[in-house]
Length: 196
Length: 196
DNA sequence: ACTAATTCTGACAGTACTGTCCGATTTCTG
DNA sequence: CAGAAATCGGACAGTACTGTCAGAATTAGT
Image (cartoon, rainbow over all chains, first blue to last red; front, side, top):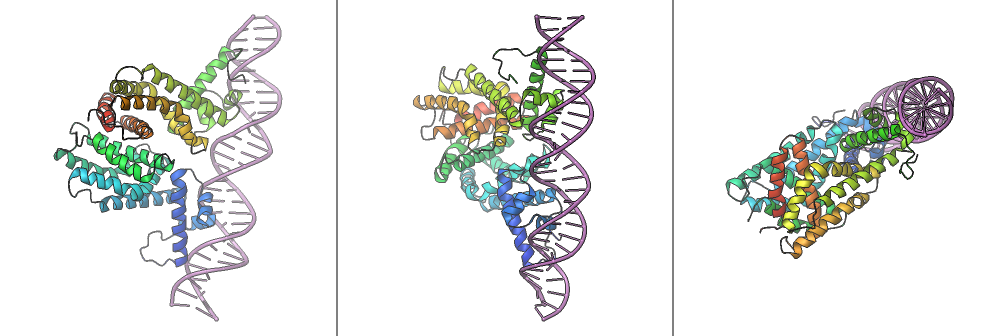
């Protein structure tokens, strides 16, 4: 159980299995956080015992999935460079990037958080994401582009909620991805007081 | 198992038990949709067998809870008279009413929907609520108060998402109820293009 | 081709929940 | 108070999942 590839003495075999398990776990857990290890193993094309060979327990697997989803989401946000340019433009850049890149990770994170039991750990998990959002929002308020009367935490939560809502509309087929991005560009900044 | 009080030959005893079970179910299921019947019975101060005396199966109980939550939510919405007066004012009235009255019911509905398995039945459950929201939104668009470029379905979903987000902020103690209502009054209409 | 890592099949105990039955007991209703 | 309704405690089979073990069969690295 090296788990972290410190001295990568893992065989290519194991590497492949871990990747398959991880991918299957992300896919299944995003929709159903109570998916069993057997289901995940089957979806990964691997036996249940192989999963246990790489992850001590169910919680270990869940933690690993959550940790990487968080890291991926944060990386994608940083790639959108929210600290560059005019805040409203940075916000629109973030909306565009969110769509294909960030949403899947955020979705797993959202689904997995309750499974960790603690009620406040949901927020704790999203902390690095919220921190980046809030930094952008604070910058926008200082620049007079966002409503200074709205609490920073609220704006960040509302942003997350709207992105999630849009993702669901797309998933349900009630909105196509292009139209969703446009609608978000129209809705979100206005909600925050940009261009009022 | 009369269940529906057609000819109410139920004893006051049974009536009390059913009410206790229902209340406990709402409370537990809102937070944890996978709560066991044993847990619900314990929370209701009733034996597990008594629950089975009134509800044939787990799904019967869940359906009953969902049905009543939906009915209560719809009644509360209608009480806010969304069809009366100026659309923006009606919207603000709805926001105020949502807070204490509608949110608990909507919350159970949201939590329970995935437990019903079907992916599209979530939307189906919310249909009566969405229908009323969309009627108000359409009226607002005709009156020139809401952005006519935004799809009606999107506005309704966004409304729901923002109400839910605010409820979580309050539940987590990051916002108090009064401030939340004010923040919503400031955020929601603007997102929909009111007063632009 | 040899060795060690990895996977697989099969099986096991332990736990928890669902539904169901029973008999005994309590609590309403008239 | 008497009969009926309802609840309770205990117990049962059935199902499903979690971890764990061991031996056989593959598969990768050198």
